[in-house]
Length: 139
Image 1 (spheres, rainbow, N blue to C red):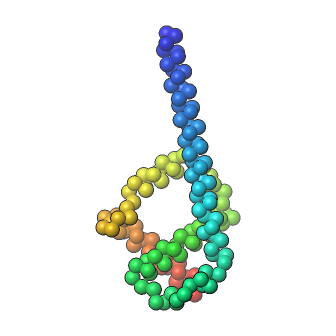
Image 2: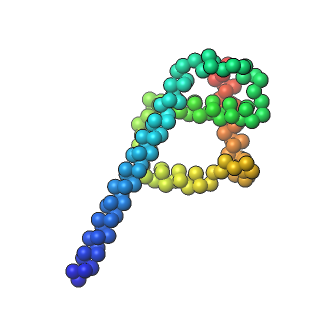
Image 3: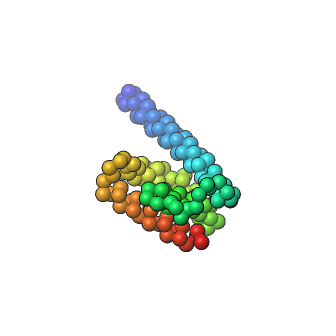
């Protein structure tokens, strides 16, 4: 009986330790995401046109997709700091389930040279959304 109690206590202590490690990992990931988002937001506040060497109307093909994705990324990063969303974003970033689901999502994504139909559809949606944002805000 004594060994069973010791075994249960050992399992419980390991579970607490695992939870603490997951919390530390999620906090580190949150900090990493904050560090990533801050420089992106600063880019919008500066004049990005100053550093460009040619006009954007000469951009075509994959450069156009890259431009649309960059616009989408910048707008999303900027809007994450929206006063109405800021608290909810922090709540979600402090939720372990969010990171579990995010890992599942990342597992389905691929940046390979020959994407499958799911990744082609995702890229099409992102490209279309970035293009619409660029047309709406870029005038």
